[in-house]
Length: 85
Figure (tube, rainbow, N blue to C red):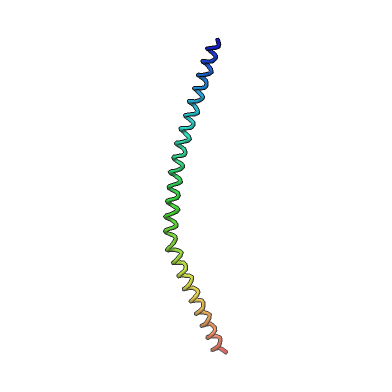
């Protein structure tokens, strides 16, 4: 009787260990998939940052040109006011 109960305990522990190993393997697979997904996202972010650099430079050029045009417009408006007076 004692041997049967001990044998049943060992079998139950083996079964639980097998289930734990299966769960562990599933978690490892999930971790690998998430790592690959993270690498893809890092790659996308790096690509977007590289692509964003020239756009920022272009935006600065546009802002500078707009500022210059605004200044010129203000000067012309001032000249026109002076001529009207």
